[in-house]
Length: 575
Image (tube, rainbow, N blue to C red; front, side, top):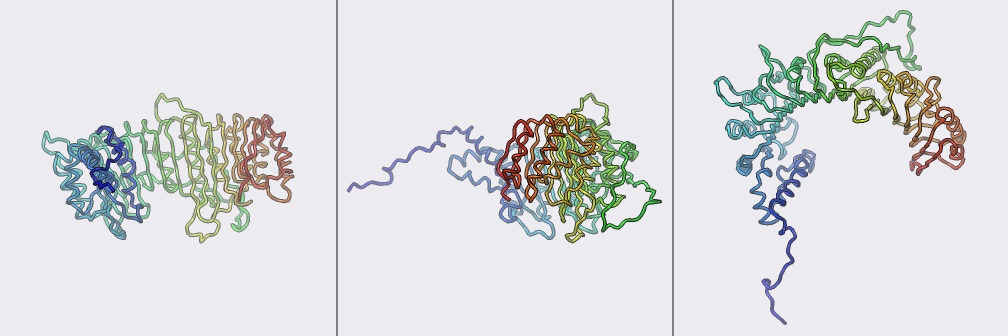
């Protein structure tokens, strides 16, 4: 037997040993970018995020460790915790690279995690980072979540003092500022004066939570080329101060994205006009309701008297109650190419609710038909429309999305749920009535694609296809329509939608019916009716596709063979 030692063994070369250092640095940087957000998430490992856990791979071998320590961009994303020594090490390893600081204070009812720091620690840490000029000038992003009692101290650090002539700019490199105040009752509302932004000449993104952006006295406009502004609140605290709509004028020449989530602007409140109800008979809500009140969309929309011009805006996102969204839409003057995303809370069964919906539709009509600002941009025509409805006991909704050939132009979501209904139906009128009002305000003369995504909850869920079809025809959607898709409905719904007196779609070339219910004792008769309807309403149909439809037996499919040039039947629904 031959005696051998461990030194006699040879190991195969590691392929990574041949990777140059510069390429290895790129690989390490890609891993950091891919894993950082995951490990910084509070949802990770049952609410306990692990800051800097993503750099554990640098311990694979000595070479990797040496390369990582010499690459400062692996250490410049700093999460403030109660361990002060970590901050010192990271600042040392980051060298002269830009800094991204995140300091979050836990909610009073939230248990402590590794991603959160105590209020005292945040103040001490900010003093260590902000006060030294050599560190403050390197900060690119500052993300702070603090309690109301700590906000005055944070505001002093953000504001600083520029009284001396020749004093350098405080935040010469700051591009993103995120400031959220943890809500607390019976505390003064937080406000961020506009003049504070004058110390941040490179600021491009501003995110404010439970903090109103207000003018100072005398008002001043900072020379900031802000491109993205986000303001949000939880909507539960009446002490929250309304933001000044006039502050938007300071960013009018540069602002490209505006997001308002349950934030009230200081604007004149919209008051619904008094309705003359004389001669109208009272009706019982338990019985079938009369048709929705007539809404004149040609009436000029509400004008609050305050104009804010945003000629560079490319995206507007608003989420709030319908009554508070109307003044915002009436105040903002937008270019024709601006994308609108509107999510509103709306109950809808009462006549005064329909008045609100009518005014909302008039505001949308103005934004889509008229150019609010003088620009030379050619508006693109609306070519596709998606209508989604859901009627259930918890959160019924109507969703509409229209787009041009290039991008989405308008997203509208009507949330009609009521938390106080205890599982009872909150809607008595057909849900298509709500979608019809909004559709009637849109210019659909060039519409080529229509998708109906329904909820298949029975006859009460989708009870007014003719009303929806009439609204689309009146808006000009019938002449150029080439592609039609209906999903999750009964076959009778499709027949009624396409044979409405005023809603005949003569031009469709492709029709897709997905998860349409044919299953009952009269399924063959339903197929014959569908064949008759399609032959009459779509005489030039080239392709009919049936996807995952329920109850497609041989006697059901047979009458549909000569409906279109091509009939495609995909596997039936498994449910």
